[in-house]
Image (cartoon, rainbow, N blue to C red; front, side):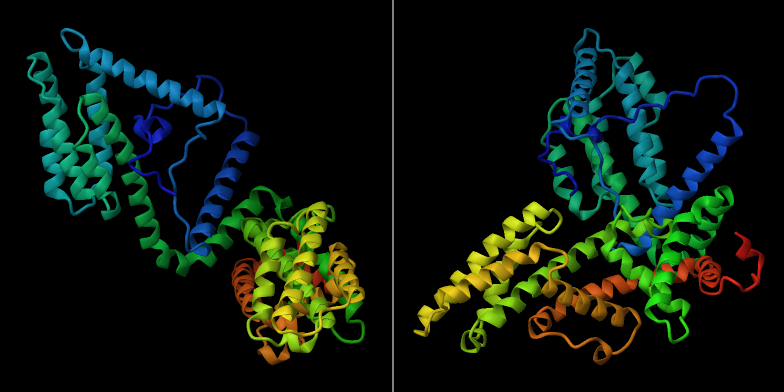
Length: 475
């Protein structure tokens, strides 16, 4: 989130003018290997940024600064306070020393110019006229400099340039008194306005980037591969492992490259870091894929709890309107964030078991029906608590159904071709469909970009005795 005007400016790096970068020490140029490493880093950085802009519709740049409770944050706060205290001391001296203020005015002018669009011809000329640094120097030498007048002009200009969301913050500048407070407020908001402009530009260019994104990313990755031929090693291992699995699973019929690729993509939803290193071509989407994998685990656990509950619960109670929805809401809340650590999951499932039994009993009391016997309650409690095991039969069965459902969506087949879903799993069909769509978008885009890099790897994995067709196969 962007900081509000109410935030203490000392807590934000945006209220401090940009410091000039120190020049690199004179000496021998970097070695060829270091230069290649820098070029490689730049390629990766550009590729990652372009990919994020295209894939993430919510992508935007945000103000960055160290946490205020960190050592870096405390040091930053001290430096900022010293910076503004120094300016205050200079302006309060007799006669006032404007040397520091002159530097800040020049930077304010530079920042304002950076916010102007090509069509702001009149405003650019007016800015050069009002913030004429040579004229301001003469006013300083004659003791006639009026900082408040210049600040008023700057605030008016900011008001005409800022996004509507910044209007309250710019208006608040008019309530500040004293040149130091005005300078701090101006720099703080100018920093936010600059980020706003960048984000506006990104959103404006996004449709054009999307048209060129596949070719751009493919070309950038080729540059990376040219600089570091080992950049496909993990990807090759990932695809070969999927090919071996597919060949073992489908021994009686030919194996297609698309089936292998889909199996490889499915592996990413249940990735085990100890098995092998993450494929390079998927790294830019790893955070998204890890999140989808966690959602799959959560849905499998929820469906498993509902499945064992429905088996032990009387049909009269299970079919009551609103019962399953209420039960699922409780299960979802209790399982939140518990599936990544075994100990957390065990404790969460114990709470889930107690809640399920209590909910069922409460409903039966209200309906004046016979409550579950103690024996059935013990069985249900044990079945729910046993779901922490990865190899639990119910959990495995539900997991296979979920994987089959997602794979059917990945292959683009109609819903009727997906595996038959058990009743509790059908209750989650909307979430599964949304998850499948998100997963499919990532897969489709990745396949479009990196398909030409995957093809020779898959060809060698599926037809090891065949002669390579092109030079690419030698990569």
